[in-house]
Amino acid sequence: MNRLSLYIRLVRLDKPVGILLLLWPTLNALWLASDGMPDWKTLLIFCVGTVLMRSAGCAINDYADRDFDRHVKRTAERPLTSGRIAAWEAVAIAAALALAAFLLIQPLNLLTKQLSVAAVVVAGSYPYFKRFFAIPQAYLGIAFGFGIPMAYAAVQGSVPPDAWLLLVANIFWAVAYDTEYAMVDRDDDLKIGIRTSAITFGPFDVAAVMFCYAAALALIFAVGWHNGLRGWFLVGLAVAAGCAVYHYRLIRKRERMQCFAAFRHNNWLGAAIFAGIAADFALH
Image (cartoon, rainbow, N blue to C red; front, side, top):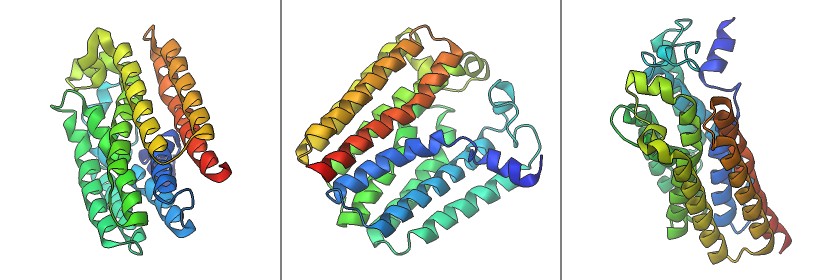
């Protein structure tokens, strides 16, 4: 395998679901902040920036977890863990991608740049929260949702309450889908001492996932309703709720591959919410 292929695997460009899980909440925020008419340059900056920051986060995550991942079936063959690339390469790639993302937002206002610094700190520190924090997926929700306040800052020059409500909704959503993800690795994580929500919730893991879906959708409904969204927005939320019910059917028996399928399917849940928001702005 050549070097470029290894780097692509390091930053997970071969697994775009993670990019989309960051992108949908960011697009929701851009559309809501701009009343459905985001500037195309700002839209492009956030789309490219999402890819760069997710990729940087993957590289730094693999660096932080390099001594743990070799004990987990799903991650043992990652390029850094398996020794095919060096630790310094992962750090250098993460730094280069984060720098590229910062340079990308230079046309935006000062508040957006200040929030971007906080976003880098959160993303860089997330892997270490698994050492001691009982529900690191909640911290992941902040990292994955920082595009929300940044989008409002870029469009409106401020971060209103709606942005923070959407960020809280994203935290609940991230706990839901990443608990499904953690259910895949629960046996390995117990052996090596990593903290995850799947372990913390124990026998209540499925109930916790469903509660988090409900809380996320309720908060998104509240923000959308406050912004005058109605028909198509409600259709999008209904489809998203249907996705959540489908996920329950997948995870209720806690089978490894079914839980992983539920995690991956969250892309469609996020897409349904964004489609509802975009359609309602466009058609009402």
